[in-house]
Length: 175
Ligand SMILES: CC(C)(COP(=O)(O)OP(=O)(O)OC[C@H]1O[C@@H](n2cnc3c(N)ncnc32)[C@H](O)[C@@H]1OP(=O)(O)O)[C@@H](O)C(=O)NCCC(=O)NCCS
Image 1 (cartoon, rainbow, N blue to C red):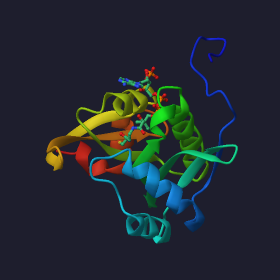
Image 2: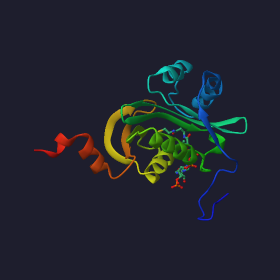
Image 3: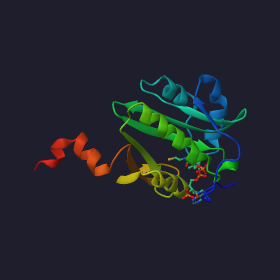
């Protein structure tokens, strides 16, 4: 399905809701089929209990179609986990989930969003770049199975990345 500008849109309205302990059996199942080194249930328990934790599930009707996990530290939100059901990828659902999340973070006063992504993960990288994330660093051999570099990306919620860095770390400007 496409909108008037020809962009793909999810076929059914997505409901984005806070992740709760009741979601975790479905979330863990989706995690297992989404990552080579998946998080276990206790990792999600920790994420839900973490101070500043902000974790969301995406549902179409009753069906879990994806989730996003992360936490806030002061003005930054770090996105630690994101997945869409393997059979539903490439339909704009991941983009829609991230768009709702970014809107919510903006309303909470978050000024920058950070994440790491496998260097070879083209779908995720495209999704992030389209939404204004920029590469700021590479962490060598960060991932296992297979060993691979992580690309570190940042998205300022307003203005340019250089403006954000100059505001957040004014001493960086002075020699
Ligand atoms: C990354 C992920 C969440 C994206 O979800 P999605 O619903 O497929 O995302 P979208 O449909 O919104 O597509 C996002 C972009 O990826 C592109 N894309 C989709 N499948 C692709 C593929 N196989 N190869 C290259 N690009 C692809 C889309 O074209 C889109 O780019 P565009 O907006 O420029 O057209 C999903 O692929 C996923 O769950 N992957 C496994 C877990 C993972 O890697 N998570 C990210 C961790 S950082």
